[in-house]
Length: 138
Image 1 (cartoon, one colour):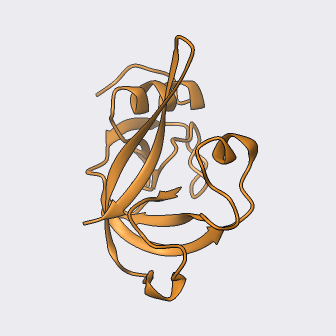
Image 2 (cartoon, one colour):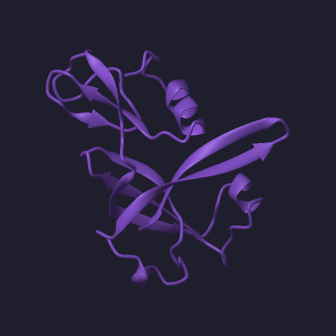
Image 3 (tube, one colour):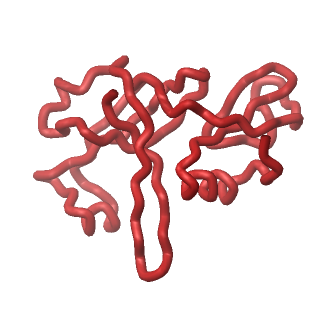
């Protein structure tokens, strides 16, 4: 499908294009997001790019009250926490991402197993534009 190397740089380039891409082992079929160049199940390096649908279910989450500096600049703090979690994609891979559209002031309302869809967050700093992976309730 794609001829880019299996690296973090390639993964970020795909995110900038608003594509959620992973790698699939052509030996055992295991899929990874972010992509890996070697399968950790069968140790083969015969990997291929695969486009993910961007749908999945929340597998685990945490609400963060003390954010890193760049998140503080976005307005997050002890009174305005944000959520991050593990999303089990329909294709079988799991990915860590920010969870948008949930109320972190009421974490009891955030449910493991809830359906999610991909959302791309953009941050611009000067002439540099970065895209971050997030998910939101369907």
